[in-house]
Each structure stands twice: as C-alpha cells, then as structure tokens.
Length: 167
Image (cartoon, rainbow, N blue to C red; front, side):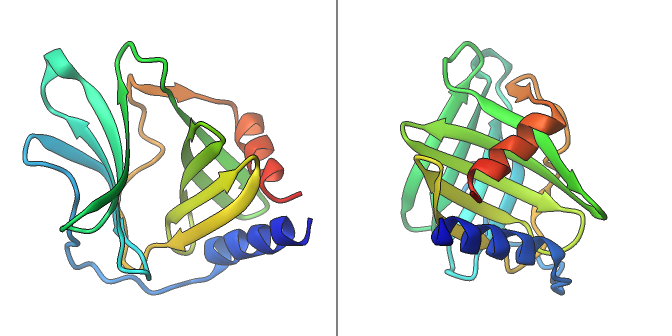
C-alpha cells in the first residue's frame, strides 16, 4: 500500500510541478516512414516514442522505449489486432491529464501528458507501480487527439485506472 501511495504522490508531483521545458528537438525512435504521436527523453536518458505508420495498407502504432542504439521494449498495435491502446483523461481540481495506456500481460504502460508539469510514462505490474519516468524536455505530441487505433475510454475509466495504481 505504501509503495502505491508513494507512486501516486510521485505521479501527481510530476503533474503539478511547473518544470521548465526546452523547445529543442529531441531524438526519436520513430522511423522515416512513421509519424511521432508522442516523443520524449527521460531523466534516465531513455527515449519514449509512440510512432504511427504512414502506410495506409499497413496501419499500426508502435510504442518504443530505449535509446538510439537499442530499443529495450516495443509494443505494436495494428488495425485488427487484439492489442489495444486506451485513451482517456484524468481530471481533478485544476489538473487535467490526457493519457494513453495499454496492457502487456500483467504490465500496464501509461503515457501521461498533464496540463501542467512534465509528460512521462508510468508502468505498473498487477496494478502495483514499478516505474515512473518524467520527460526532461517538452514532449512532442498530443495524447488527446483521436486515432482510429485508440479505444476511447470515459473520464471515469481513466480515473479508475489511475486510482488502481495508487491504492
């Protein structure tokens, strides 16, 4: 319970803090035939990219985490795949956070972009927080934009998803 509470406090601190972002272009793990829907570099010098193919016949979105030399983890979603990316907004008080999340086995990966503070990614295993990485530069992308490969969830679904990671 304590680790979940600490994670939630860390998560909200990242949302509330008014970090200063640089407008410098950051490295991306997206390929030349892909568009970056989300891209940032973390304080651990890892790159997080959410890439969309530009080829209509082979439409996919792929999450990648790593560096320019090695991708540590990737997760691909194709149009008729069972894999899904959920999209929602967590709102509370003056804080509004657009989110995308997906499950890979017992792990849930959450990309978050608050209206204030740094963007980032959080990872849970069996609804227990195991990692949260903030972007050190302003991320590229808008997690609120709709996409045919995103499964739109209600604000309540997003709130419940965050709540489950903080109990």
